[in-house]
Amino acid sequence: MKPVLGVTTTIDRFEQLAPELDRLGLDLDLVSLPCIKIELRPEVLNDLYSQGASTEAIVLSSARAASLIDFSRLDSIPVLAVGPRTAASAKQAGAQVTWTGSGGMAELATEAGRWIKSRRVLVVGASNRLQERSRSLEKAGASVTSVPLYTTLAIAPPKTQIEGVIFGSPTAVEGWYLSRDLRGLQVAVLGQEPAQSVRSRGVTPDLISTIPSFVSAVTQLTKLIQSLPEEQE
Image 1 (cartoon, rainbow, N blue to C red):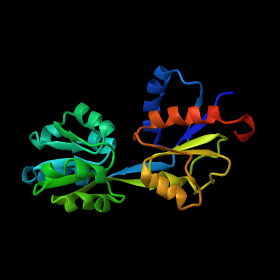
Image 2: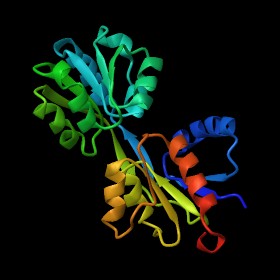
Image 3: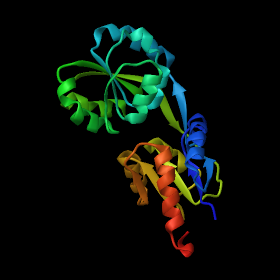
Image 4: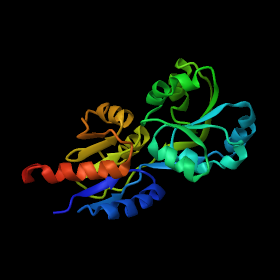
């Protein structure tokens, strides 16, 4: 029997997953259960372009942030991406990616610490916890200005019946609990931040994907559910 998995990202991100998963040929049914929505802040984008002349690098905290920027207006400023998916989005948008981290802001601060030390950098992403995440770059010696291009808001998902669910952010976990809980579900998360959010609600994630990718998490969670004894499903 095919596992039925819910993905809690925005509808536009969910639609981007379908072609990638089709190529993998996984035997599953995927359901869009959006738990977040994006509120853009266009006035901040204009601020970013005006501040570009006085910065030495741009640090992108998400693929969405990369997709919103017109890099032709930033005079080839070096770009550091928090992870591979963000780097790919930035390159597609015309950025010159100087450094690609392994998937988290703290990891990027460690990996690129020598490069960013004493440099003026703009950290671009969602307003949710952006300043908090920027502190790791400040500890590495960078002079940091946070640029919140958008805000991620929690929304309640439909109560569609599923066997497993995947969260990419703490805000998505918050949205989930607006209408339902996690009893009886296999739970996968992308990284430690959503993992901690799930744990704070008394649930231990069944899978913490070390690769910040919904495709990777869907693949791993499908295999996990298919490996369970029938009575545990």
